[in-house]
Image 1 (tube, rainbow, N blue to C red):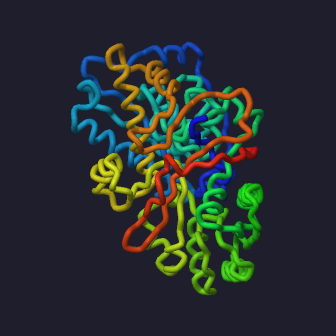
Image 2 (image 1 turned 180 degrees about the vertical axis):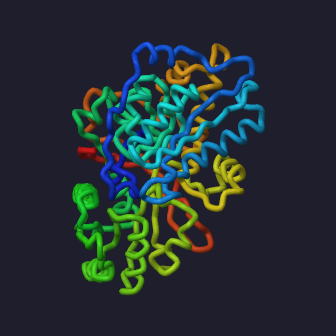
Image 3 (image 1 turned 90 degrees about the horizontal axis):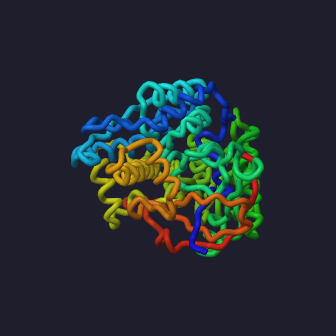
Length: 431
């Protein structure tokens, strides 16, 4: 079996969205005739622009910059593409919509982009509450390379998350309402770094505690001794948590808390002298803002490790990464989510180019992406596929990208992501 990727057991939700209850509402529906018309009508021909939509929760309750990275990366790709002549001589016209992080706003964006702007596809969707997902699916508009913050990309057909899916996607999340994720992150630190004891820090808040239990379960499945640290959401005592994880000899620290809380936790760890092999974070926090975010905790800062499913945006030894960095050099900050948004735009472009001879339609783009088998966006992604399985796998060979932060160097890739692979169990969880 070739190396495969699925949602990690420790990444059932994006960290920034963790403390909010995210539900997917059905939203209003259009007549079936409108849906059919939308799938069969090609984008205007004769050199007219190709309209695509980008939905982002840019002004969400969790912060203005939290969800903007993928859209920034996608727009940078399309800007460079247009400067080089577009697709078969046609410019890609980007229609952006900020859904405000609400289900109502998301449905409004979906309606505008699909029914008014007549976009061929959505690209790099990053929505806190993707309430419009059923409507996108019903309209058969391909959503290419979106970030799986919720369960939408493992629920609805015509939605293609940036990490792929093997779920049936027939209107129910995963298999019978359950998703499955692997334990490769924990296996990596056990095998490569020799870690044996892991602390999991959470708030005394329902979503945070549930996420922490998921991490704990994965760690125990890999044979770790697990230290649990829960702090008060309103008045967190991170110093006490840091002192306890030091006392219990934690090698690793995972968390189910927000970015601000992570900075406070790291500061407390430095203050009490807690030294760990790794303070592990996820792809969303894989950014160039680390020196500012963790300015008060140099020891903990240099113990930060990130794991994901795409090539380190700081690894400019790679030609594809260099092109991304060159095109985004005007941005104030860089992030892994920007690189993944760039990859999503590339994915759409490859689909559209395959359709150029017969007409760049929603149906043609959808068919190309749906056929994706081991798509890598020029080597920026671990191989992405959409091959629905009737039953969830019990184990899978799963690869991962790993990087660690080092002052003066930034994020330093740890080995090659295509060969950092493990056969790991797939654990069920409810989204």
